[in-house]
Length: 335
Image 1 (cartoon, helix red, strand yellow):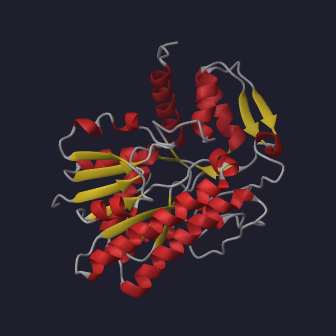
Image 2: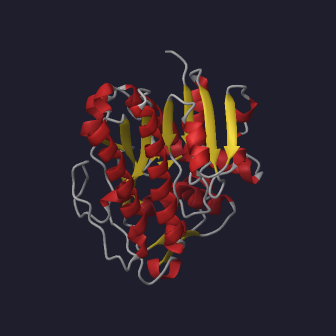
């Protein structure tokens, strides 16, 4: 494969840093831009040693910076966004602004190059949050988006990412700008922070520190967890497939687990004497917080266009997160 110059926005984050490394591994030049609001340059420690890697601390809300960086690349992976339930509940203005305006900037700059005859593929990272609280047992990409009241800040994230999708698809329809949209479902793995409410690293960190694991509501909510390496492999294959252009794809695992069972699996792996504490959503976030009970993707559309399948089981993924957190916390692996 001919090497490319790729731009990764939000590349100092959990998923973005893994993507940057994989692009380097396949021989590409990689430029990353990140404002480090939720990411960390520490995630790029290995990438920074590579002469084909360039890092810019900055914001994708800076039009001139975006214009300069987009002008030099062959592919764009737009991952910069507000992340985590806690951040979304606490800072809805930041969530909306961070998600919508930079996407519009990137697409408009890609449009300038497209009109000049320079076609640059763009992968837009979206989220399962766009389905809102759709009551179906599992979701396919053409299902209705079901959000709660605008008085419930919880839904601002999903609504803002839906606007991102509408923008990208409008550029595809009107200009044939080559875009691919991936809706991520609970991506987990090494480097994921517990700071913004991400459930698996939060459980693992608590257990390693000998603390009670906090489970929201009754713990019977179901989610599907996919290892970040599997997700990255899927994204990279998806971008190479012509049939994927202008498409929206669920990306992740379709094997659900309830949150209480996830907590118990972590406890069993680390310290069976630990216990679980149940905390209401209102106590954890706010009185107006809403959530969806089940979040399971249908992967039929994805599986028609890519060959990659998830290689990591949930147990293997939990083990990987535990190993990383042990090292991060400076704990003896044998303790």
